[in-house]
Amino acid sequence: MSRAIPKRRQAPIDYALFGAALALLVIGVVMVYSASAISAEKALGSPLYFFKRQLIFGIVSLFAMGAFSRYDYNRLREWVFPAFVVVCLMLVAALFFPPVGGARRWIRLGPVGIQPAEFAKLLSVVFLAAYLDKKHSKLGQLIPGSSCRWASSGCSWS
Image 1 (cartoon, rainbow, N blue to C red):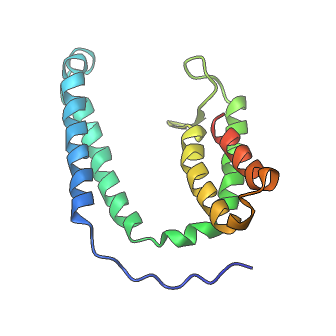
Image 2: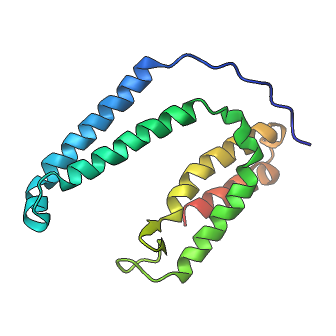
């Protein structure tokens, strides 16, 4: 019952948006260096440790931004509901992992730790957009128009 999604024409690169993202990246990397150089020198022996690490993450993020900018976001509708179920399960699963810093918000998988609440925040926006697109005729009614929005917001705020 999925609607056929027409093929999207590739839009040119928005250089103003790319420039703003790049400027924020550079400012963030410089701020990390200025805030952590002395403590990194004392604790790790290299003032550039956190700077290099943030720079690597920034470069990887630029490539990810380029890849995702070419993705047709209309195709996200197909994955919204399964992803929402997975994120809700991850939020519940985080309660059964050992606490980190006194809070049970993290899922540790070896050296990698993820915080499901961050995925829930992003997915709640995508979920609500898909819901509002699909059910726009019922939005004037109190219960049918609001219950799903309240449930998605409550799940992502946990």
